[in-house]
Image (cartoon, rainbow, N blue to C red; front, side):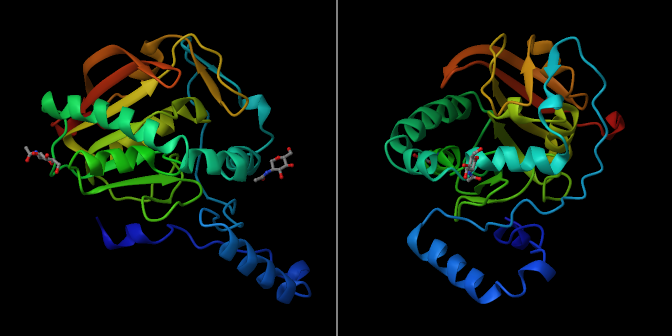
Length: 263
Ligand SMILES: *[C@@H]1O[C@H](CO)[C@@H](O)[C@H](O)[C@H]1NC(C)=O
Ligand SMILES: *[C@@H]1O[C@H](CO)[C@@H](O)[C@H](O)[C@H]1NC(C)=O
């Protein structure tokens, strides 16, 4: 991995002035939080991301739920509320862990057999939370695998917003994601995967079609074409049925080798 991957992509800025007096107390509190919870992460992860976002062109296949969020920061806070929920993180790290890693590993093994993923692939999991899918990739032999999420979960997941991936163009051979419904800007979600995927690289996206998302969803995908149509620099390898934790469709895409396809 590039050296920068081991660091959060952006410096987190605490609002300085009003907190000055409370700093000694705050640092104690932070220390306490860090020392008592192995999965806890920096509290100040919702700092401005400076993502120049424009609304996606409306698609008849994607119902946006943008009115749920008053601003981009509000959206990030909302997403982090679930990601940082201590109770959920405990479940993800314990009784959820083996079951999910095993299932992801089976899915990745079958992609290996199809020649869509190899042990030498540089792999990224987009929106990986604690990194079960990253652990699965490493388990099946893909050692250069990492995840991104709004909150880091070392060592498997580094901090990164999927609307502005903290990686250079053409970095990865393989990208996986099952959080498309959390994308506030679906075209940006897809565009960033295409940007960081090398030409010829493979993206595998698990989605639910025709299913209402949870209260953290930012969109509902009504037809798989809504997703496929966003990947203008990719060819569709296949669209298959899967049974993956409430998600029913696996979309496999390959980034075009010609450089001509910049939209
Ligand atoms: C999430 O939101 C609930 C109420 O809306 C709040 O009580 C809780 O502290 C929040 N959790 C995090 C991790 O922000
Ligand atoms: C990939 O790695 C796995 C796990 O280490 C190993 O069992 C498998 O043989 C490797 N595949 C190839 C083609 O080297």
